[in-house]
Image 1 (tube, rainbow, N blue to C red):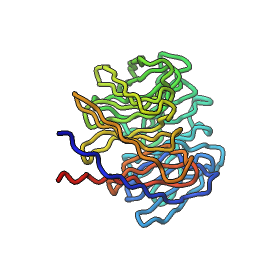
Image 2: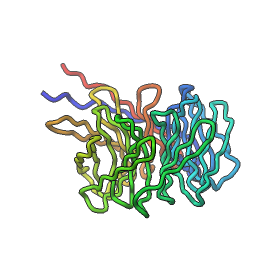
Image 3: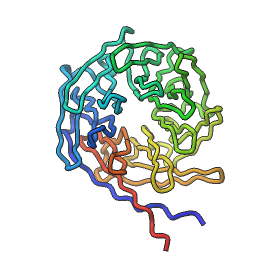
Length: 310
């Protein structure tokens, strides 16, 4: 008998004004949530007790986008408009690393198995790599106009990334060899991507309103959402309860959860409390809850509790 879906509660925490734009979010090594303020050019921190702090980057035009915890106990982030990679310590000390490629548009960022940070250059059709000392390498993609977006470390030692305008999923080895997997659905527009707990890579198709799954061997499955206009944006694996992945539905003001096994899949969706809150990034928090950045100026905690089986 299938297990009953968990009970979900959602709590919102104001972290900025509506113009600052919370966008990317990640759990920090200090037990806090760290997030980008894409329009304000700042990095924010939400402590476990609800205290909010933000740090200026020195320029309001940098467009900090995606943020991740680095291997060096600091946070690393992309500056899409400033064409830089940034680093912020848990004490708020900021460093910036310009890219040699003009107008690169770095967006997604993730830690690789080599303890370097790997990132996408959306405007330059490249994948970049930066060490914690600031040394940068760049690898060209075999497609032009692909707009590589999010990136995640896969279970096979490669980095997997979405190619939003090429309608494909890519994988890159640590020495720069790229494999491209076209998607079956035209104009799917993949954005967010994550390594699932089932040994596959999961992604969202913002243009098609679908969740996708690809194995390291390249087998692709797609799962339509109830609302094809929901605009799923980001996705993250959930190690708790019965696994699966959580994702944001930017166009529908919801967060969703997909659970999959070889026989069937289930999708649950949950409305956010504030209308038109524009959910973007989503991350597993240090408390075991999911946290999502809402562009209107809040961060939401999504807590799932296993249903009573009695």
